[in-house]
Image 1: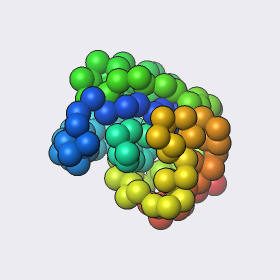
Image 2: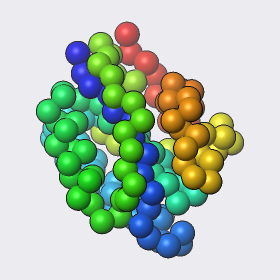
Image 3: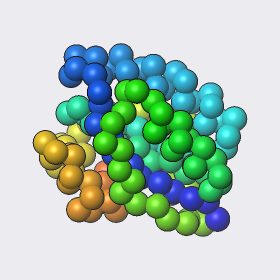
Amino acid sequence: MITSLLYVSRSTGPAGAVPAQLADILRVARPRNLSLGVTGALLAHRGYFAQVLEGARGNGDVLMDYIGRDPRHEAIRIVRAEERRDRMFANWSMAQVVPSAALDAFLADDGEGVGMDPDGFVAALRQSTGAQLHL
C-alpha cells in the first residue's frame, strides 16, 4: 500500500512570480522525489498550487513537512489522504500539469473547489498528464 496525498496551498509570491516558483519547485522536487520513491503531479494556477504526492507513508510525511516550511506556500490544506494499492502517477517523479478548462473548474478564486470534489480533480490531473492508472 502507498499513501496518496492531495493538498492545496496559496502561493506567497505575486502572480507574475508563479512560473519561476513552479520551475524552481520542479527542479528541486523531481530528483528528491525520485530518491524517495515518490510520484505525483503539480499544478500552479490562479495563485494556487495543487499537488498529488504518492509514496510510502513516511516519505509523504517528510515531503509535507518540507512543503510546510517552504516560504513559497501558505494556507496549506490537505484535501485528501488515502491508502492506495496502486499509484495514479507511476511514471512521474513530479509531473507538471498545464492548466486546462477541466482543472480550472476546480480552482475557484478561493481555491476551495478542490475540496468539493477531490476525486474529480485528481481525474482531471491524470487526464492532463496523460498518466495511466496501473492496476
